[in-house]
Length: 307
Image (cartoon, rainbow, N blue to C red; front, side, top):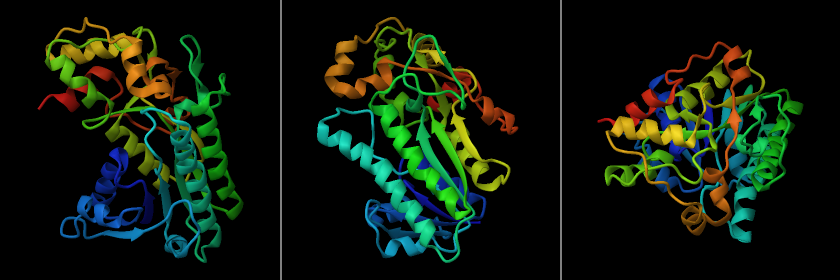
């Protein structure tokens, strides 16, 4: 297939492009910083990758690059787990909502329209809860900032169906892999100072990066997939269980909790990402026959942290 990818240099996108390249697909990377993208995907190693500069929140000539592609994968978005100033919140919102609107606009303009758009969303769509379970059919129970972002993000992508393009929306959980959330937790564990963040009782709906990449590729290539799917592993855990598993894998204790105020000092409002959680189950994802390489958290962590 010929596939256009936004957010290609990110934590998930870089692995996705690598896997698509290994499978022999032609990839068109739409990049805000083409020079950086070419360093991430050097032509000598990625012969099937073409880097194209684009302005994600503006209409322009770049939109013509989508025409003739078989599919589009939309992963672009500013990082969320950081301090939210009013300006930063607007950047987070615009990078997802306006960026997706312009990508859908490009598909609408295309002479030869892509057959499928696989667009990211996040489990923040549902809101947070210590008791509720969330499936793909669940409605949001809390209208916080992350829920607003995800709902706007998905609404922007939904418009692509009016052009006859199949839409697959994947609500992503907390992605585990070296370089992601787990990498920030390794140092205290190595220093025998690891432990749960906050109360430890909050749900942690996670997914191994390799499984998430596989799900995006399945959404791209499986014509029976349509609509919304949870990009999470089938066995979410409490934060305390995650830290116990990480301690076990690293042969370190997991006894020293990280107080709420430490995370709030670092992240401000963004602390909600780790201090509050939700139990998200991938019921519809599993109904497609999708097979997880890492359905349980301890083997997933072992693959990530054990050299």
